[in-house]
Length: 196
Image (cartoon, rainbow, N blue to C red; front, side, top):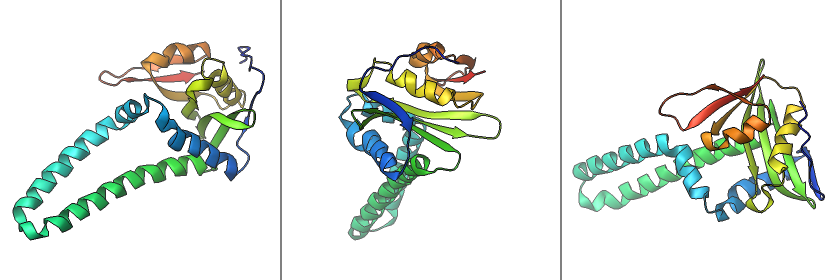
């Protein structure tokens, strides 16, 4: 399905060819993305259901342990909780890196501007459907059709139907690309969308 999105001069879109491309995307998504003002809010929205429960459980466990152990052992308990928290963060980072670098059933498409990675789209291919796991374009390159072209490049591969969890605010963006709203669950801020 071609919607005729035109890529501005200087931009190219292609599949990630090697590990250098994948590291460039990791650097873009993790290291450079933190400069974006909405990044912290986005992380809290994505991890909120898990983070709040985890922090409450961690706090209650710390209070429970504080009452059981003498005060001279609190330093070791604090070290344990810090290491546990770092392990929790590391677990999520490992999952992210695995998704990005796993080549089995994963397709990573990148957008380049003058040979610098400025955007990416990651898709997981299953037996009877595919899932768009994420699309990102740096703020300075948005509103130029880069994201639309990334998704169009993936759609041309014929991996249909395709599903994506998207915030309601992006519903119009995905509708322009041919996605339709298929399921809405109350209490969720995400809309499950699909392309037929």
